[in-house]
Every structure is written in C-alpha cells, then in structure tokens.
Length: 130
Image 1 (cartoon, helix red, strand yellow):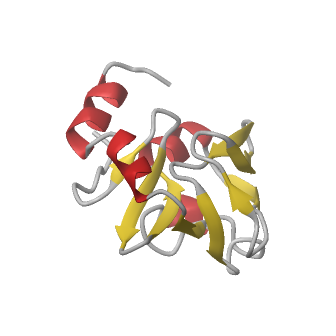
Image 2: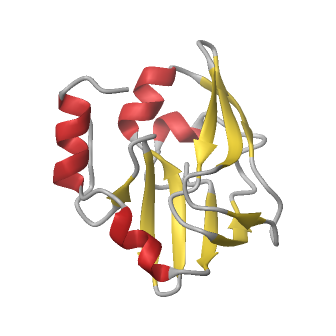
C-alpha cells in the first residue's frame, strides 16, 4: 500500500493538500508518482496566478505519460517549488516533502471540506481507481 499521510487531504485526481492556515501546500501522491513512473518534467503556474478548485493548474510529464495537475482548492499561487524544473525526480523520491509543487493562498478555505481524508483516499486507490 502506498504511503498516505493522515494529516493531508486528497483529491480523486491524486493530488494532496497540506493546510497551513489560509494556505495549502500541494503535490501529487505517492500512488500517482508510482503510476506515472520516472517524472522528467513539471510545468507549474507562476506566483500570483489564480487557480480554481478541481481545474488544471499544470502538467507533470513522465517517461510513460503526460498528466494534468488539478488544484485541490481555489486561490492565488503564493509559492512555486523552484527546485522542480531542474530536479523533477524529487516528485518521485519525496512526493510529500521536497517534491511539493506549489502553495496556494486559499480564497475559500471551505474548499478543503470537499477533499478526501487519508482513509477515503486509501479506499479509492485500493479499489484500483485511477
């Protein structure tokens, strides 16, 4: 079973969100990076860009596929992981740590209420839903 930290919230599209006050740190799950294989490129929005919950905010490219990234919450991009363009493999080696993608200053913190718990996400991935 893939690593699913209990303090995070999850989307059906395999993104995670770590709520930090009015901000949410975003990345993709260990399950997602395992499905993708070796990540070779990550395209992210610029600081100041607006993102909308459940809409695409970027792209992750692996040796197997190109996948859209979906925002778990709406708001403004406050930070972008500047290490990823040069080291996209951080998404594989540390998806919940150094492989984070961006921080969103949430416009509606209630967006978090619509996300999945770790237990719900584990059920989703155990059922083989991709």
